[in-house]
Length: 130
Image (tube, rainbow, N blue to C red):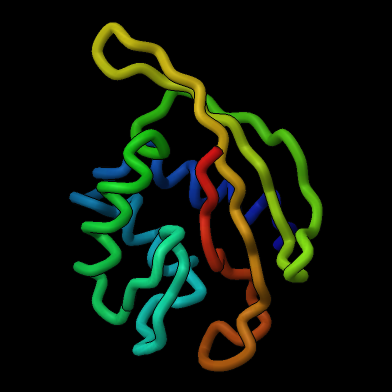
């Protein structure tokens, strides 16, 4: 899959994060997370955190990326590569919370998994809020 397809699959799951079951969208994000299930510390949220258990990821995601859930629309702004060699996809999401509309930008940083059952797959190493 191309970087844009990887990010689109994740964003589509977050558009309705509780369908077909509670927290399904966040479970999809966990499956695409390069550090999921690992005892190593991850910088997925911008700070060091272990993501061995889904519950650790769930709490962090709900706190850090609530604007990525239940949004109205998204657009791709840029696709490239950063200095660390990660493929990057910058997106803007638009939505509303009550009567407040918002527009937020995020960069998904992607790396190729080097081991395990997902070896060779593009995975999200971190998401950067702008």
